[in-house]
Image (cartoon, rainbow, N blue to C red; front, side, top):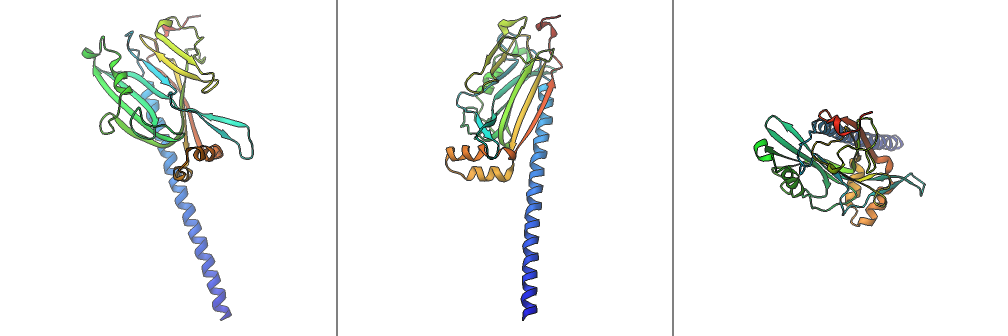
Length: 275
């Protein structure tokens, strides 16, 4: 009987170890797949942004980025500290590119549902919008693709789901000398540039970018932060938004950041002051 009891304890221990190992393996595979999806998105965004092309129209929206009015950036803290370590920022971005006889308008935004005017929380799903206009219809109507983006609601045609668990998605624009573009930057065609620095929403960041006519950034830096699947699942299960914010603020180690600066091939160098 003593032998049987010892064997039972050993078998139970081995089963517990096996279950724990299997759970850890599944969790690791899920996280690997999730991070691979983030890397694939980064590749997609690099290709999209690299094709930004100035429309040459005063009412065209060559590049647009904005922190939405109904979004409050989320703060994150280091474990055991009350000092803010980083502030997550989410922006909507839109830009124009051209392929043969069509102008392509492409946009990205993070929401809790697919509508551009949908709800926004600290964590959401990243969506991609795309539309195209023939050059014959585009001349004199350069604002139409952006209007389509700003009113987009159709998940089956113009909008596609890209990535879940996004807590950070924003851009920084640079001139041809690699200097961050702010509202004090020297650009030779200032009437086609609108830039708003943020002093309250996200200090130190640009709240709004707008470029038209022949002006585009020389390069765009993109930063995206993705929450680990297991932590995202726990966060979604919390019914109270305040409790969600407190939970997220203390899980900075579970956010994976991807950052890359993308050169714009079709930039018009004449818009920047020459030395």
